[in-house]
Length: 128
View (tube, rainbow, N blue to C red):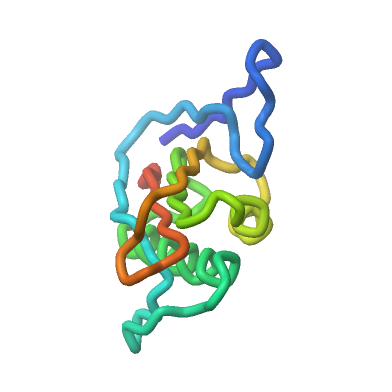
């Protein structure tokens, strides 16, 4: 398994906690989108996008670990936001989950998310 962070000054630098690209070789795990549901109660966690991002990332972490991987082996993350105005507050939470060599990432504003969530996060990760 190999995960290499790619960065070049010939393209714009990352404007948040993500890498320009990640080169990966090995077995991959593709997650479904994770929304901020409590896995025990099935209830939505958090009123703000930041609070919901924290739960969605906890759920993502649990799914990756169940598949034999972890956040450190993430190579690509996609963040879906109900409102792009929440981008900065979600980035603050996201940066805590990916403190070093973060994966490549895209973020989109969408019309609606399941169960009225403000945030949904999916990931592709290497399985070491």
